[in-house]
Length: 178
Image 1 (cartoon, one colour):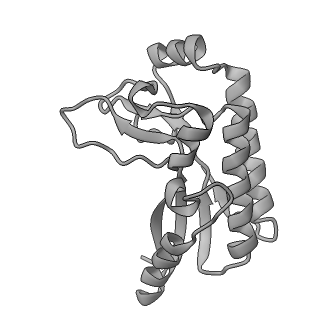
Image 2 (cartoon, one colour):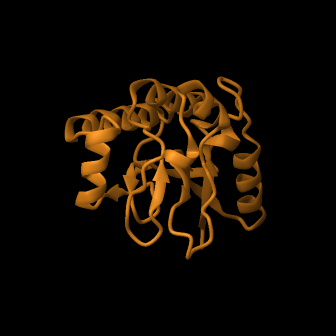
């Protein structure tokens, strides 16, 4: 294969608010280069474990400072149902959304023109990996009733994410995917 997928975690890229660490991305780029490959990267940003204990606990992709700054408790995050019952932070909350988008724009300042990156995958929310785009009705109901989620909020959140990635990689055409 000429391209590898690199799964990056927001918590690794921004361990402190506004302090960026591109080590995990550099490691992925270097590993791919050693094999004469480029990368497509995905930044996991909303998932934080899973409630179904029959399965191995999924890693938390969220920086610790997000929990502190926004008063979130990892134990009370909403689950999305499905096999894993993945827990998510409310990445659609405007301030959290802005924080994530700022990190993506900073990433673009460093890597927007990097030819070792052939594509980036824009993620949303789902029960499959927690970062896709599908939800079960019960999860939607819980998010709407308790976490400020709606179809309009989803549209605004995803549009802002697409805009951040497009800004970050503005000099490249056909690089963003979902």
